[in-house]
Length: 192
Image (cartoon, rainbow, N blue to C red; front, side):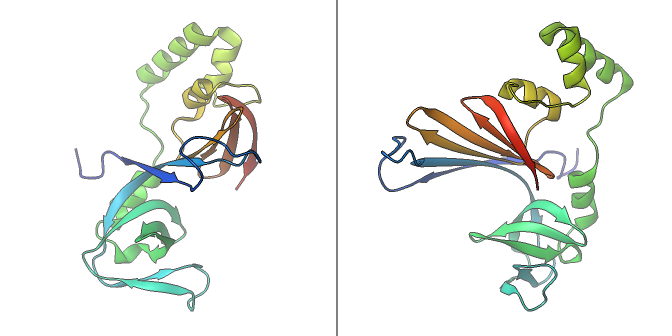
């Protein structure tokens, strides 16, 4: 089991002025919870953190060698990272063991034929034949519960949670889509 065999889960709770967990009269959220899945990366040399990976003059700051960053995703020959409250891009070759990290972020989940058949049978048993088959084939549709989406697509990279006066709203961020939920029910999505 390598050092990159498991992604780390980080919970950040940001309290917004105006009360903890109570929505204001204009229905704006007062508490925001982000769940971020990341892989820690150590810089092998000093590297530039870019705001825009296509613009060499968009340097936000320099990250010193041996500093640890939160690697969120790959973007061409760059990583999308979080460092000292900033999100930006660093070149992959500036990070120690970058090939392993790229593989960890892009490799499909390991699923043996037996595990795949077992997953299929479990979903059919849990949801019925038609719905279980759709979830097994990674379909999503409006009206799905958050549990059904987890069974279909797995864990998102980020969950933004908003408490409202009449319930809650969530945005689940996947590499190519943002899914929107209201009170635990999928209400829509957009392509990133």
